[in-house]
Amino acid sequence: MTRRILVLISGNGSNLQALIDASRANPSTLEASIIHVISNKKAAYGLKRAANAGIPSTYHNLLAYKNKNPNNPQEAREAYDADLAKLILAQTPDLVVCAGWMHILSPTALDPLEEAGVDIINLHPALPGQFDGANAIERAYEEFQRGEITKTGIMIHYVIAAVDKGTPIIVREIEMIKGESLGDLENRMHVVEHVEIVNGTRIALEERERSKQASE
Ligand SMILES: Nc1nc2c(c(=O)[nH]1)N[C@@H](CN(C=O)c1ccc(C(=O)N[C@@H](CCC(=O)O)C(=O)O)cc1)CN2
Ligand SMILES: NCC(=O)N[C@@H]1O[C@H](COP(=O)([O-])[O-])[C@@H](O)[C@H]1O
Image 1 (tube, rainbow, N blue to C red):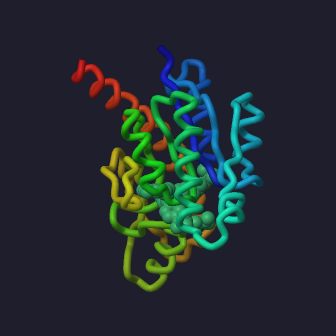
Image 2 (tube, rainbow, N blue to C red; image 1 turned 45 degrees about the vertical axis):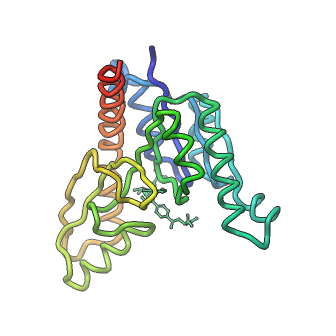
């Protein structure tokens, strides 16, 4: 049975592209099919990448929920997340991959997926516990400029409610270079990301299969 991956994006989608390319390489380096892409940003170039690859996609618009419930942003967010979980489960994925997905998932999104036995993994451009949250690369670069750190990295981790605190699957350290521009650091990190998001996805799928076999 071909393993089914659903990918969540918010922007350029270069990591989505890495997953697409790996799953379609001959021989494939990722034995799985990307069945659907969901973006929380309408202008995400990753939606065009999905279309170019013939992969169905959905734009899930948080603003529409906030406009329907202007006086309670938390309630709007939870309704958005609950519908996001329904959108995801309707595609019956084996795994969800956050690939530049810039929205914090609340338990109203995470709980239905956990109940359905669908794992979520995330690519985060920092080492465990180093720069949790958004803008991690920029924050690392600023600390390096201040002489506070000498290295950063990327990790692929399971997603739990606590942001970027889930169990790491892959951790890769990246040495920082004196005099290097932020753009050059970002480019070096993206090269590593594009390799490790494929490896992390493969490992998560394998771990899921082992866990299913053990429970049978
Ligand atoms: N519950 C979890 N949700 C998410 C996780 C996670 O580990 N647990 N990982 C993130 C990805 N991420 C870092 O890797 C991350 C992305 C975005 C943010 C954030 O502050 N988002 C803001 C909106 C920012 C924007 O729209 O530009 C927000 O959601 O309010 C933090 C961490 C994916 N989600
Ligand atoms: N907190 C999550 C986060 O910061 N993710 C980062 O967003 C970029 C997405 O690029 P892409 O859209 O080209 O894949 C990547 O650098 C990824 O590490």
